[in-house]
Length: 345
Image (cartoon, rainbow, N blue to C red; front, side):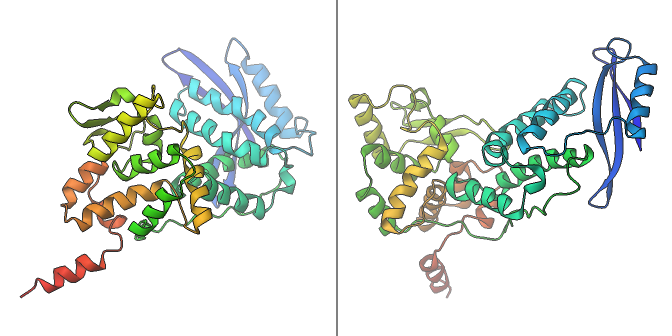
């Protein structure tokens, strides 16, 4: 049963009119906005809204579209979802997250008819995000939740009755971060196809930067006189800060500046996914499983082996919570553990 819903925007002093419907989704009652009728008194009046509501409830407004692709459903849903920003129902950042997820989802699902989606489509999408683009399970979950918004909207529009179960990527909070051995690092550097790959590996090895931080690092952020790197945070939950500049990395940066390889940005790659693919190409030739984020874990494990205190490591890696050190970044340090036991008298 559809109802009329009024949403008041006090800042703009206007009232928006929606045709809404309450439905059970996953056993919970949830409200779905079927149509935004516009501003009360300007774009629609109360009598018009009641007439449109009656048409929906009588079935006269039921869509005649039967075969709808994911892209078509997205094109219907996006303006309605964007209107919720204007009335203050969702934040602008929430809508931007939706747009970000759709940049990946539309090329993959856009051409597929909604009633032909199957489990394999979603599994292949998850594989692409994790293995090809180097996304972590949390990012994959965000993409899947944004896709579900379009699918639930499609159910409300009666384009589909249901959609295949979408299994979230399992997140194991106790899993230790994967790291490179010293031998693997040596092999990667020796078998790199060009100087860009070598420099990118060194950049991550000697800074512990996250992949997205590495590609956004500019020459103005590197102080060669004070030997410091300033890292700007572009994500709310990721800390920025300053870290020391390693002498080996400093030499490599100066060398690339003299060559003209560095003009504005430090990294030779402008997007994290391109950098990850470059590293993965080396790994495939050597039979080593590679990712850009793995260098960050390796950076931390090296500090552990040098007996650097956890609070210092957290500062260098810019962890907002020191517990992250114990949850993910312990690494394989059997020698250190054995040495600790041997010190007990």
